[in-house]
Length: 154
Image (cartoon, rainbow, N blue to C red; front, side, top):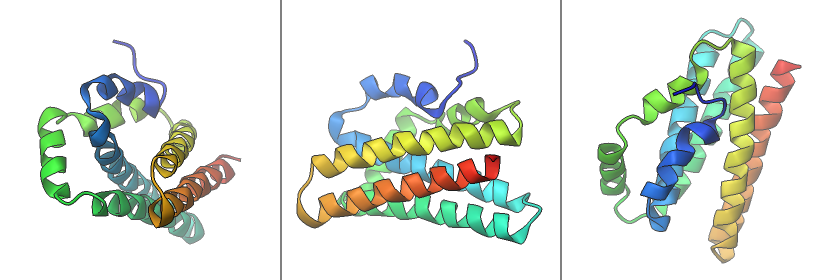
């Protein structure tokens, strides 16, 4: 199999195997993986301002995951069940980034953030009131990360 060229391409094959009500929790898990990626980049950043920006991106990813998890009464069990079924999430994520230089990785992640923003908007549309508003604001967090990465690339 060829190396995936995007985060969406790496994880799209899982979606038919996931019940619709499990998708948000799977997205939360992917947000946490993205947070780890940001922390890895931050650890190797040459400039403090870049490190701080990457850590801010990582924190936004955690914020998104935590909100999604807060909506699930038994998030830990759902995450454990998904991890059991899809124990290769880390490897899938790494397969997209492996062998690519930092600029290429940042571009891939930036595109992934825009995909995440789309999911947040879908979740907002599927909810009402404060939950919908929070998902809409989380779409803005995803876009903020994409803008930051695009600025680093430029």
